[in-house]
Length: 287
Image (cartoon, rainbow, N blue to C red; front, side, top):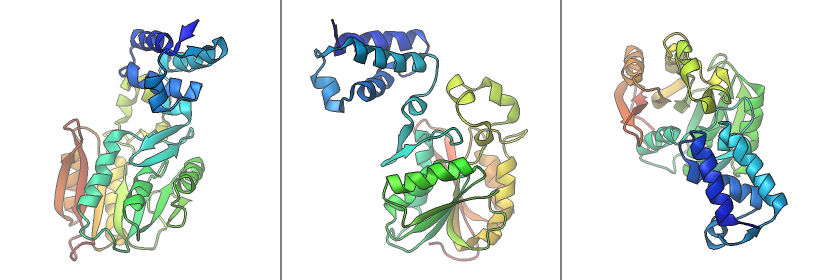
């Protein structure tokens, strides 16, 4: 007979052998899902007997993770900020680093009750836009993505988190064709240089959509496009916040400076990487 504790230790050992970085955390998520356990159950019921059928179901998920399929892809959803977000093949899996963008926006808004209009370019799951709407009760937002499947996922995630009344999503190529102006523009565009794609971890290279990763020869192609669109997209004094790749912050800041933006700030993620560039349209005071 197998206990939960024995199954857990076996699963953790299997993931360590496979080179997974966080075997303990990944095992907890996968066993909780496979066995229908809560977080407290996972601790309190360590000596509970697990049936052969349940153990086999759990170990099947562990083998998928050992093959370097990400936990979020296995479960079909991922936590981000305060939200639970469903994934599909056309959405990038949200990472904790991206929460730096949410923090950067919120830190620059003195009145969280203000009626602000937001746009998220390359929205994917809708993670950035929806996290901001969850914190800004009178804001509303538009998410744009080239992929209809991503738009479908983001729309479902708005419903899933009770934000559908203030969030809408549409297919589009960055901001082309959009005539409205917004108080805040956010984006986590593709920023991996094309030649670096092959060097990425298998969790990313084999499971995230290439279109959401490949930023062109130097990784900066989407930033150039969006930066050129910003003067016609932002309200006077409006805010733009980009996620950027390691080593790209200064280059992206220079693009914004070239468009006449001011108060350009580089912000670091929890790992100390300059992960975010924030700037303001120079024409007036901000939101």
